[in-house]
Image (cartoon, rainbow, N blue to C red):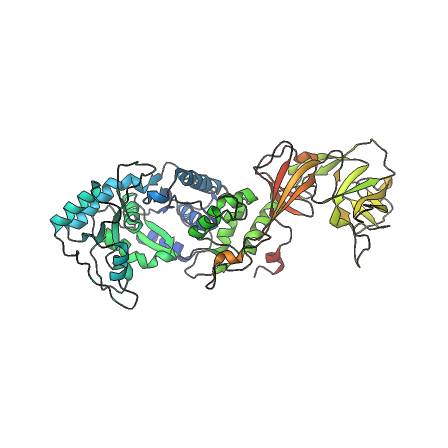
Length: 568
């Protein structure tokens, strides 16, 4: 139930600042409303992969249970079998665990309650509060009215209790085709809240369910199922996003009119809106099915499986969710804050290693041929506990092509003809010559000399150089493919305006560098391991890696626009 670093929090109440939901629960604890209990739930529909917006809800629901010494359930609202798959159920469990939370033995499914839900529906019919309607979906929509015009009664609204019970049981028995009939609540077609204008409670779907098989051909609607599931599980505070605020009167109506064990309190908060991405499940499905991305775990997607593959840590996600806080106000959160949280975490935890993305060969002409020097490199300059490794240095090395300029610009402190630079932890070298392709004029190789007196990358005579380059030994470097990810969209809000959100796709959201080289310590790095490529950014070993070629995803660049802007 708890994130690892939060175990020591005071169980009597939250230690951090009080958001409005915690203030509500504080008051409930004072008045003894729930007998001192706090019981929440995270209730995803298993019809897609979780994304960063769900992470906010996960951290909130499990965090409330943690802070108040309560419990949090994981419940799958699996009432629409046409869109649900076991794959999604499995991925959701993996994501919640990855974030650092546990539901212990409290994993439930709405389908656990199908018998009770059906029995409660018959109760509503018997009380004259539900009826079977033959109107089509389009007709129901037309009869419902608008925000400014009241609805009108269905011609089938006056059916007797006996007729409704008979028809509903025949629906259950499979007599009617999909869409032929629905069960509706009988509330108020004149209500200013459109949600209360006789909402549908059950519909016919001759679809096999991933858990109940073909046992059912009628399935309850989410709004009807959700509140009853909450009550059956003893939930005290039913936390949901602001889009369900208008549905709260229906939540209360259902529970007020049924003999349920308890009546949880529904509380709404603003969902996460993140710049340069989309968090609509429908739009994410479109990106996947149209193969705009490689799958649900594409590192450009905001899915938890995608950002995990990209290299994000659960600590960074929890930190991000804590920073953005909980409120009633909708707002757009800058992607730069999420990236900042990851940099802060990886700056503390990631080992520093060397990689060359676009190799340019350097021959150190006065270094002995065949000699291999093992140089001790610390993994982190400020954390000795991360240890060190031996990096081979040889006569022929590779540096970044961008670290050389034949005609250097002003204040150029890297390699150029006649310029001296420091090779990280190795030697000072001076560029003495340039080899070019005679056909194209492209620089293919540099000739340099090293100063043996600068071993370790420092001069004993006090001589200083301003440029320090990373490098790899030509004879020992490991081939790698490096994938550089950028934001998936070019617009801060891709869905703003009337245009298609797909028009805002960033054509440069992925750059693949197929012939990079990394130091030998990375040859056996496990999938998911995160490191800093010195001077280049933070990277994660991808699942596509093979023994012959390692694949790395850039999690985030080193430049921190959020910190630079003062965390605006």
